[in-house]
Image: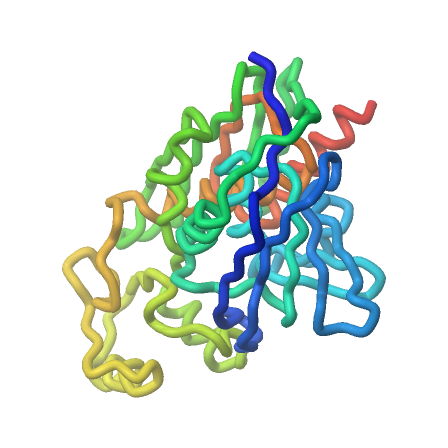
Length: 304
C-alpha cells in the first residue's frame, strides 16, 4: 500500500505548565511542507532557534528526553512526539514559548485531541520508512534493560516493566499497530513512586507537578502526618493510599497503565529517528536513556 506524508490542516495550540521547570506557556503546532519533519521553534529566544526532533540532538535523558541545538533546548518532548507518530503526522513546526512541553495530565491525550482538532492533511510526497531487515538488540546488564527490534510489516511494540516491588510488580503492554495508539496508549499517564516524588520535591525538580499529572505508587508505610503534608503541598483536601497502592489523586485508566505509559515513551523516543519504522520492538525495563541509546544503535545500523 502506497502511503503519503501528512501534516496538519491548520494551526492549533496547547497551553500548560512544564513539569520540571514550572513555567507556564503555549505550544503551537503549525503545518509544514513535505520533507520538513518535526521541528521545535523557541519563539521566546532571540532569533527563534529551531531544534530538529532527531536523535542526534539528544543531550539529556535524566527526567525526560531533552533536545538541544545551538544552545537552545526543549525538555520533555517524548509525549508530543508519540502523539504525532500515533496520528501519522510527519511534518509539523512546533512553536514553544518556554523551555518545556506542557505536561497537562502526564499523558499524550491532550496533544492527540489538539492535533485531531487541527485535522490531518495528506501531502503529495511518499512517506519514507526505516525498514528493519535483521534483528538489532541493545542490552545493558548493569542498568538492567534490553531492547530489540525484528523485521515486521508495520510498527509494533511490546513492553515489560519490573520494579521489584509488590505495589508495582511485573506488567506487560502491547501495541500491534499504530491504529491502536489513540485509544489504548495515548491516555496513559506517567507514574512515580512516593519516595521519588519526595526527592524531586525536596530538590525543587518538579516545580510544575501536582497530583493531577502522575500516578503515585506508595511502596512503604506512610503516616497520616506525611499524607496530610502532601495534601497541603498539593492543595488537596485529603490524601490517602488506595487498595491498589496508589494515592487517591486519580483512577487508573487501565490495570497496566504504567506499562502502557512506558510503551508511549518508547514510541516517542524512537520517533527521533526521523522516519517511520517497519519493525517489531520488544523492550524490557525501558526508559529514556535506554530508548534513545537504542535509537542511536538502530541509526548506526541503518546508516551502515
